[in-house]
Length: 95
Image (cartoon, rainbow, N blue to C red; front, top):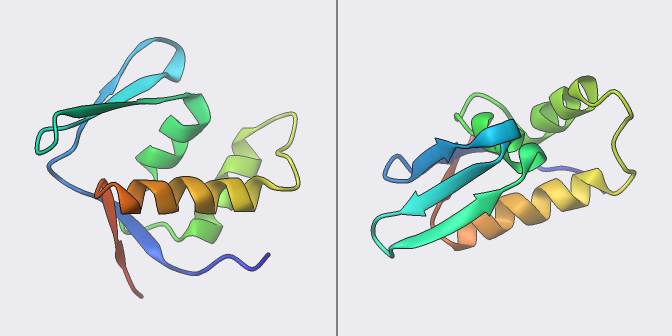
């Protein structure tokens, strides 16, 4: 699977609250919805700054994970980012 070279960026209205052991909660004040993030999702969320492409995020995740990442990690990352976009939690910067 070829990863697009988009630069995702978080919606500045979304509240990110880090909890224990790198778990986190996102809060969308417009919809009053909350979303739980596991440690990998939190790692990805922190990279959604408009400066990291999806490919760069994957590369940094591989560097961070001592045991390696599954072969289908690119698909999971793209699905996660697509879900965030569909919920209005992030957008994109094209470079």
